[in-house]
Length: 118
Image 1 (cartoon, helix red, strand yellow):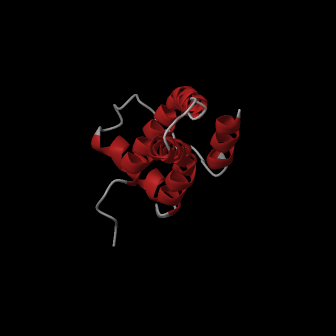
Image 2 (cartoon, helix red, strand yellow):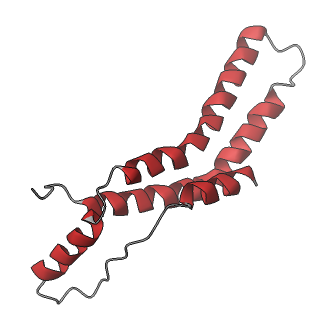
C-alpha cells in the first residue's frame, strides 16, 4: 500500500530547516559567548547566575538539531522520495521544469556538527 503523505515534502522541509539552522549558528554562538561573559559580572546573585547557566544550556541544546533531522530522514521509507518525485512529474505531464533533487544526507549531521564547533 502506498504511503499517503509526501516523503518529498518532508525531505524538502528538512532541507529548509537545515539551511536555517546553518544560518542561525553564528548568531547562537555569539549569544552563547555573551551569556558566558555575563556570568562573570561582579557580585552576581546566585539566582541570576543559575538562570545564565540554564540559558547557556538551552543555547547549547541546538547541537541536537542535526541528530533530530537525521532521525526524521531515517524514518522516510527507502525509495519514497524518488516515487514522490516521479508522481510530481507525472502530475505536471512532464512540464515541470523544476528538477526533483534527491540528496543523500547521510553525512549531513556530521558536517553540521563540525560547522557548529567552528
